Image (cartoon, rainbow over all chains, first blue to last red; front, side, top):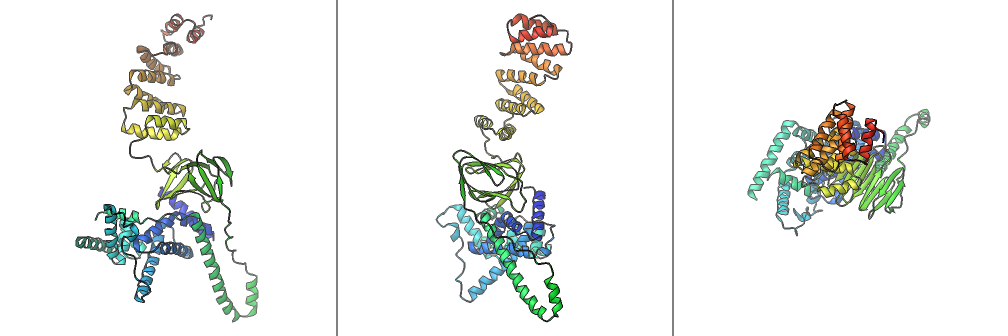
Length: 186
Length: 334
């Protein structure tokens, strides 16, 4: 996909949205909905499909509500990831609170949604990575998913997370180290 | 754990692209939220305004009103389109045989079987034409393209479309195919000829180029490519392909290539003479025509052998169209 053309289309849609054209939000959702929802599913393991859908929509509505803060310089999906990260953190806080209040028994065991019946090596590997990713603290999981999975540079990921690039590099290093250590223990 | 493992894990958590209905739902939800906020802020504003003098309220009443909320989304009953050509909302939709297409709403098309070719009218980016096929989605702003369900394929003839599939977005421009041609073994020549007969010469040419990049000594493929390039009036490309076919082909194909090259150089007699002499050194069934062409080319550059060549056509092939043409060139009576 031509990045330049993609940015032109993004800019056009954002302009229309600024002018109050709600359909432009729908078009942006069609363009980036899968990407944002996928990111949410990776960064907050255990979210239900309904939660992912809801958080995804909230991400886009928050983007539309805060358009005056958006400057179309970088890639739009990085900006959306920044909003999605905050939504994901809120979801995690709510989950912890619900657990603390005894309202929720916890997320399903790792890999249940991946199909236990498929006992092949690939599924085993996914379940193992799922467990490793879950074992990371949220900040490390966020930087790992943003860089290693979503393909953002460390600099872009730092912008998304609102931290300095050096801090992002350190966090990424610790995330990989923690994954390696956890893998060694497994 | 490698990055490949991570990618595989990430792929297992891919989310499908939202449907147009979900996008419409989001737009409606956002509009409702804005309306609610407007009411909430309006209430607060009125409370404050009550503390202000009446003439301010009177001035407010003459202020321009806020924009209207977006119009409600129209609900349209889905309709199934049978194979054939349909005009829908300014678009031309050609449903192939044994194919099924459902128009879910204006600008929203679902391909449930086979393939469909669409010439879409130009649209604003905010209201694109959306074609869904299985888990994939093609978003169009105004172009000519075709979608096939199994195996999923999008071929764009004009303009640009955006394809969302398995959580990834790809932009497909005119002349391109999504997914890109397989890295595995390209189509065989018979299949490529079928493509040509099926009216897809551009796709066949792309496939041929890919095939020849791996097997540059495939003379039959070069010959097919040369014919396609000739048909498309790309003379230089056709000549290059014929030269490759001549270099790698069996004697019969090499002869065909020499004759085709001579024909392609009709406007450049000296080049034509080279290829015609090469053809006549190992002649095929087109000797009368080749010798006539040679005589004509020689005649056009006042070559000393021109008359002799043309007379040999008259003597060796009496009663043929070539002999008649040779007589005409020499000014002999018929």
